[in-house]
Image (cartoon, rainbow, N blue to C red; front, side, top):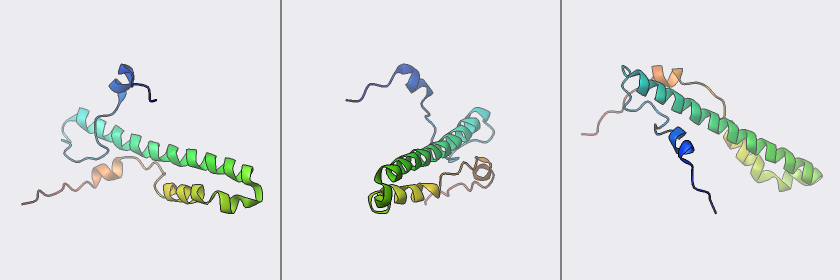
Length: 104
């Protein structure tokens, strides 16, 4: 049964999507919130890859010579997460942002 989220957790929970869509670059608070959101999302992906790697290591140790058969799902998941797990920062996304044109 999940526990209810505390008020302190909800206060720190991000409310900004990890993108620069609709961000006014003159509003420093909104810009900083978007930057933090992009970085937070990159760190979450990095930590997910780390957790899967640790589980894969445990599986390899536990299964021994059969690790190629028994740990294949973890290996495939890790290789998929590894493609996007590097923390790159927000500067490239911010400087090369192209606003989406409204559909008419």
